[in-house]
Length: 402
View 1 (cartoon, rainbow, N blue to C red):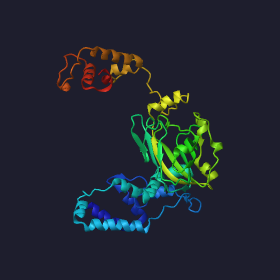
View 2: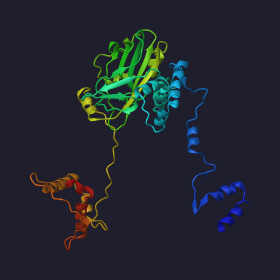
View 3: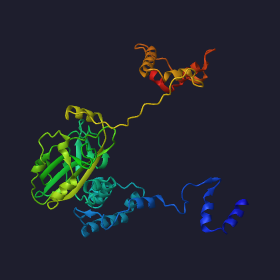
View 4: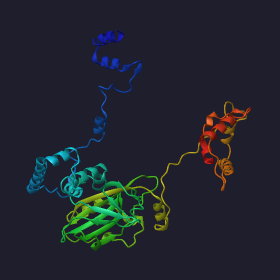
């Protein structure tokens, strides 16, 4: 009844006063602007990322996607019609029992929607923004990249899948479709983790003047370097870029001695490289994977690069411990005194307790089935009962004893 009367009186107020009245909900006040005035998350992101379309716009620097021929469309429509006219095939397709050739499906996808999907995924991962700025291209040449691991299994590079540094220790096997009288350039780089210049990349592999798809006959400008993501940073992106050449190119200025184990000599900038050779190079293929730290990175830094491994971690400040008092009130004395003991001494005490319970030739004592149902001895102090309870249930540092 009171709510109805309030609504009737609210209709006679001015609009600005109405907003103030509507902010009150069940005795609480909404912080910020009312929902009918405040911007949505989408509107706020659009205002934050607003750009001038006359200045910032995307430019396609690659090949256009080849159009599907009418003959191919007619063949697909004929196959579809044949399945529709076949009652058995139609019944199987409705029950999702119709078998298809997955290799043929993948080939069809690569020739039709594959470049568009790879472009969208690469745009989502910020590949074009970090490498080319306001430029992009359609990866019309599919890349088949496989790493051969130590246990003779192949790990394939797709679009952003995770491959460990131990799996990418050796140069991969690369295949793509190309005519024999064409020349290509293949570059593997990472825009993440440049320790000298954060605006540049590291070039992990550079092959130039590749005849057709014969990678082994290409000119090696910079030898292969395995992924070396730093510890504590997360995932690094490792990108394979395939360029088509109009003519043979002289890459002498980029050539590095083999093996190139100095990271400062692998400093790389894809945008500057493309600007210098944009008359003779056109990006055509793209594939990338992600990699994070594993123990082989530490070994590589120490044994191959002869340097210390960079580690990124948060340096936590030491916990504040207030000065000790003569009579600490309302604090358990055993926990209070442990604050001021040497941590090594406490660890030694727990280690000795663990060694008492472990015997090399005897089986360990089985844990209590119902630890809370077992009574304690009489006349035990409360703090000791609590410690025994922690040990039975497995709370806190008591787990170090097990």
